[in-house]
Length: 314
Image 1: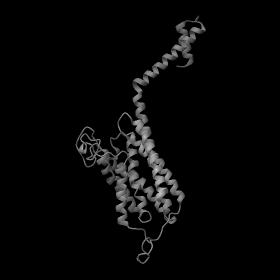
Image 2: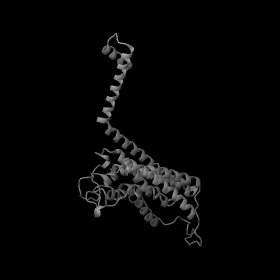
Image 3: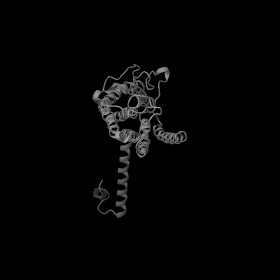
Image 4: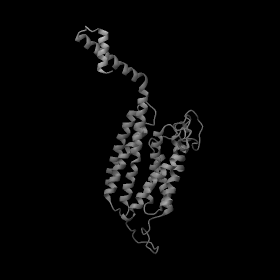
């Protein structure tokens, strides 16, 4: 309410012959009443909307931080390869993000979480709804899961460095994020997955608990990388000469930029906060805020200890 309106209300209420003290008291009472009305409106009707908006906002920010890990992987890969292969390596990391966006939007999300029914104990192999995000309202959840799927694909980029064609790599990215990763994610994170801990009837009464993708994301990417390495073999000239004869001593291919490797490490460290902390928002419970912060603390300590340990063992 404007000051002129308050004055007119109080003048009409107290009369034209009211003293200044009476008018000030009236204005004070009107302001207090307006504040109380505002508080009641927040408590009675708008608090849930604010909570939902906060969850969506933080989840989208966490998804952006997790997606920023793509830049970290790109920097590490670019710094670890020879200078002549930097462009090729950077393009592969870009193709991961692009291919994953299309594949996960079209079919990957549907296979992973489409048609999830929290009230059913039925187990399904893959999802069967929400293709192209049709009838899907939780776009923040989709963005967060897309960042996870793209991360699983990028894990493989380093193992294929300097020895994979662009077209083949794009096909791999689409296949992994559109089919392989969604099947694993559905099995463990969907309430209808046969390994899911969120099912009404979980496996052996417990199910598989994967807080932030140590199995769904990283084991999937790691196993894929292992098979890709076995298929492609080592880089040319690493263990054999141009004639195909074995070398007595394997040839070293040192990375061309330690600075890029260090930059990528810090970017990945930063992205882990979105990766791990954002996952806390997907869990129902009374202590979400504490779990959210604890995930950040654990991520910090894990990265610090891993760095110190590697220093002593390398």
